[in-house]
Image: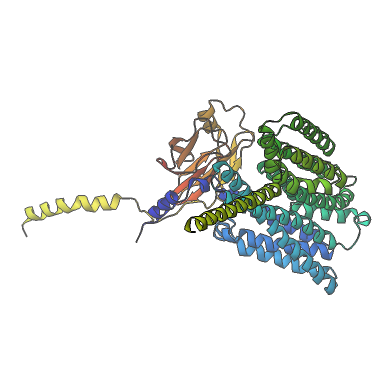
Length: 419
Length: 155
């Protein structure tokens, strides 16, 4: 039989250092379990509505699932109750409290259903937060390695989905939570408001929303996007901001008159949303400036639609003037660099549609720009191909005519000599 | 039987019989280990009290040994755990050592003083990992301790 001591040592050698750095002390685990079970017991005593009872029931379920893996430790540490004993006591207390409160069964079922939804959403939000954080790290790693573009793109797509999904879940969670109360926050009693505040706290709603915004901003900082991508992200931002406006109002009512840090945090989240919007806006124009700079097309820098229009128009006017004045071969290559590497390949398909949709440019202004590009092309382009074709056909006809004439002369000479 | 032979035989066996009679009675195996550490806060006089196992002792000499000053120990928290063999491991935030004590006559008697951090431990904690005691400290790799020193995870 392998000695116990050797097994312990072997396990410690096998488990990587990363895991070591996250080791949680047994004392901390037992204390957290104990504190939560005491808090639940207090809540049971204080409960006198169906919502509160359902909420406590949900907390007991969570306590059970969160600490089940530490059952053996808790059994040893919390003598004589142990893990199962403590939960049994709580459930007994809850049953007694339920009997005390007259519960309308249909209402109870509906609230239980919503609470289950809240619990599940909360778990999904947590797990997505972890996955998204991992993907952000992975994306940075792949970007630094500069070798696996396909993998990077796959991570970016997955991460974007993850971020969007998490944003939606956070708001769905809050909606389900408020729906249980079946009334407007403005007409809730102070006790009910305190209940809502406690549950928002326990579900980490504030940190969930902050985390969502921070992750979205980190995503923007770590990726290079096209105008159309940024437009989609702007729409997602707008949807988020709109949901927050609805929720923010409710939360303001919940925390009205209180001096909690959460009341102040409402304004912080507003500021974070503005920062997110500012980042999106800045990213749009910065990336578009880079598109020109990368190909050495010297359009003066711009930071909004008006400047873009003015600076690009000035650039095109100048190039058209130069093309008329200069007759060297370089003028065609300059046009080609602009048209093929920037205008037709990036700006028109990836940036112009989003500028038009957001009102940065009008259709007429886009047409005016395109007309200038076409005018430049006309000046620098060699004669049309059709001209070459016509010349070719004419030359072919001439050659054929000359050949036939030569053949006839030759045949005439042969006839004469044989005669 | 020859009396001389009998005497010789008796004088050969007697020491063994006496030796066996003098050896203390030992109840083995025994396990004194605590499943979880205790965090004990000192009162103004430097006494700490562990309620579940009913142990109390003064930490003044310990603080003096560590800091060479024990004038202000009131409110200081120490982390204590007992291993399988019955030794007490004690440390606290900012300590450079883990102290291992055995039990004496109305006292805890220092068995070993293990240097675990040059800068001082940050938020230390003990876990029971029989036959060892695991030491955790923020930003450091967990280490396995026995009464004789660091067994695993030392620098």
